[in-house]
Length: 136
Image 1 (cartoon, rainbow, N blue to C red):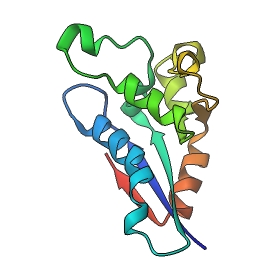
Image 2: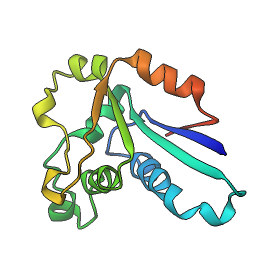
Image 3: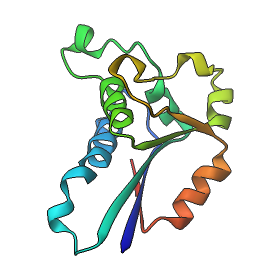
């Protein structure tokens, strides 16, 4: 069995660009690519937020109310709901003074998975062991 590991690295804030939401959408799409895989292959995505990208991880986004669009928050909740690994850089949370009480969770949707706040060394390790790394 072959495991294709893909790390999606989000470096941009949730405004001025569609990239963060695209990263999340692409990461979630791993569930529908089975028809393109060879027998025994699997896809294992990891969604990582670093730098200004950690600002995507804040809960209580008001995108639908303000702009009439689905928020990055809802996309991240869906990732957690389907048990995807979602990581955010601890050093960047500290840099911006963001406490863990302000990060997105999907408890209200019944998700078991939580976003993981990890040192950058863990994210670096994920990138080094991945088959593909995609930057957003």
